[in-house]
Length: 456
Image 1 (cartoon, rainbow, N blue to C red):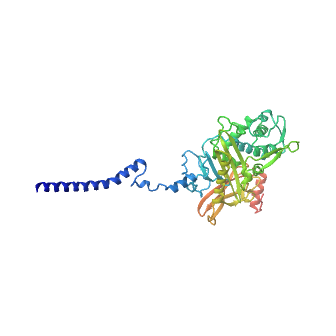
Image 2 (cartoon, helix red, strand yellow):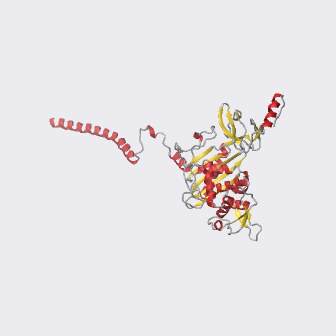
């Protein structure tokens, strides 16, 4: 009996221990599985709330497909363009519209508002986009009547020796300013650039000084030119932002798009062998509204493009630098244009040539001067935005007394939406106003005494 009783006790003990160990094994299984999964994926956590916003596989694939990335916050020291307060930086697209570009920018021409940016202050070699500054100085020389379009230029040996893209000038060959400009704008002629530089400044070195001085005047703080055509040179650099600035300035000269907007043309038409020009910017032909501006390529700079397009009242500039090939370059510029024209529009305030108002000049030979819009003034708006409350005011300097010089600030146009100021446009005197002589001032004083209305 004792043996049988001891056997039953041992059997019960074994059964109890088995149940306890089995229960522990049941709970041990999931814990071991969880630990194993954390080792395989150390970043995951079963209870970490910080992981709750992780992307699903589908979301991750979509993000990778479009290469979505957060816009980097600019350094505090970098200048920020925000001429129009109604377009907030937070509204810029989070999608990288130029994923393959080293840097890129999209800018509204009328207001200077930046619609998209990527590394816009990073210094890079600009290649032939340099020629935008060359063309700007040519257009300004034409405006100042220092040269004329039909004026003939004799190509120097230096100009004729330029390699790379060229129109094959020969030393001593004569060509008009218009044809040389055509050669720069369409064929990216390095030789044509040097020939024009020498015509305007006497030498390319002197012309480069003019280029750098003009860049400083425009606020292109991260640009330095070493030549007129963009061929590789040490310390020759610019940025997407600075290129957009000089492109915007060039577009103030409307004549330039007659050259940059042509897809094909000819030089030396009066010879037996006319030279066929085809625009290096293929978007001129294949994207509606594109009429400029300049392509560029060197092995260091890669494929670059500063392009402009206009639809309805809106003109924009897109710059991409460091693209891997022409196909990608053109596609990403087209994507930037698509974004601009689908999301934004321009509300005209004044068209070029419209009369803005008048201002009086105390003690001037002329008492009242008309102010005419030299360029379009407009406000950038998002499509569908209510524009009924948008208004503008002409605000003149309180005391305008002769003498006044042409270009002297005289006031501004201020644009409001309700009581909120959207933007303002500075105004300058359209002409010189000399101080009136004593006899003129005496007649005016006498006229006031006898209530004679003299509007001169």
